[in-house]
Image 1 (cartoon, helix red, strand yellow):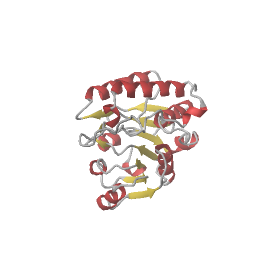
Image 2 (cartoon, rainbow, N blue to C red; image 1 turned 30 degrees about the horizontal axis):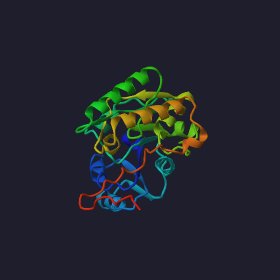
Image 3 (tube, rainbow, N blue to C red; image 1 turned 90 degrees about the vertical axis):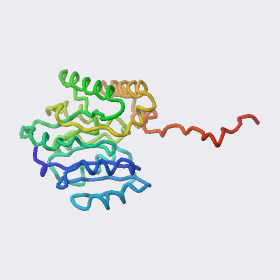
Length: 251
């Protein structure tokens, strides 16, 4: 897999606390396509930090639409879909270059997401699950570390724009079912550095992802629920400041 054959597609929304670390983990000659829906300083940081090999598209849309829009903006044979709340391992692109990607029936390569700080056990178990599912012929891909062949993405009609989450797993399943090979590559690692969803509860996240993926995989999710995220993207509840006690509910 040559870096010149690859475009990195990144959806962003208010990632000012993550984007500098993400950009610093990229090779300077990598092509980056950002689809940004921010109302903070994220696009300004991108413009000032990465001056070359960067396409910045500002479009208000959800993450699924952003991935599709970014894929359509470039003609690279391979597309690496990722997120701004991760960083690439120092040897990520070196190890990626060692992977054999010449087989035209290879449609997807996906790697693990680990952590260098908190929730390391959760991420290790998630990676263990990826190995098991891969052995069973089911790609358990994460949108933080998913590489798709452009031809495969086009063959399956792109991302399912009715989904607001789990679009990463769903596209990998369709690529596999279309007859393409999928490969789990444990050597290409990204590191999570923003654990906001896990902070709300590990059990909550596991149940949410497992249930939705089960229903999606077996085509049991009602169409009216496909556009609902079941609270996945909801901001955490605001706790009252000690200086501002909650208002009385009495009337």
